[in-house]
Image 1 (cartoon, rainbow, N blue to C red):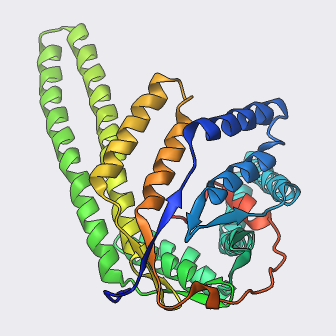
Image 2 (spheres, rainbow, N blue to C red):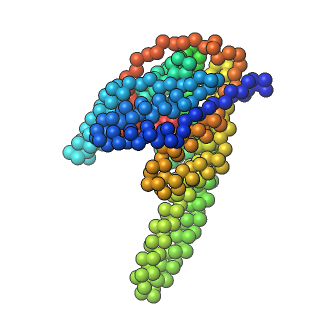
Image 3 (spheres, one colour):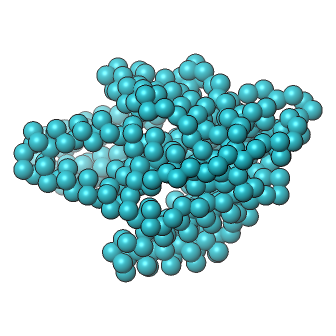
Length: 353
């Protein structure tokens, strides 16, 4: 989305603090453990309310309104579905496969309901967001295109990603104003191709190191030294761990920054355009230092890490307004069942790329 030079720029602000969120996080963790997971629904609401209420634009904060009871009901249904799948798989591989197919077939419906629930329970200036994507389009975005991506060995994954974001953004509303999305497939392929290059480079280095170590192992075997062979195996394992750390700690922040910019720089709310200027090197420093701190504190730095990431990603975004945001009119909030979002959570599904 292009903005005119005269369009006023209004940055997002995040006022959350690590110490404040740590108190919420540690209580949530303790009560969730003490109640064998039941309190997790209340913990989720408290977490989302903290991040929403500490995010502001033009001096007004966002808010989150979901009922913990509704989330708990959805979560219990999700656990029931998961147990049903495990029971079917234990009885018969064929029965388990059939149940799995049924669950996958229901996934687009669950994700569509998840988006409805999430937006219906989010507000800004007292006005609710809403999602109006059709079920037919949900099956295309969340089932058809990802399936084609798998069948083409990943060649269509960028197109599938573009279709998902288009479905998500172009069918979202704030009050009566509709969001727009105009990022093309070519832009997604550009990011994915560069990502492929960043992944292949360390992979080739790992393959080279592994080849050298294989030769060393062969020499060790010829000399009859089993200790040398074991040391070579250990080196291979360490090299593999180092490779994965390199990919997830170096490449993932780059991808997140590039994708945030691509998606939001092509998103608008009526005449108002969003702008994201996240930098890959900044994300790299944040994620790398967060990882080190979390390991060093045995996980206690996690809430501080979450706040650092949220603050950076939000403060690198802004809205360029055309006219007055107050011209947007409220739309009555719709009652949306929590089951879709919570089922998606249990099955580890997240479309917020």
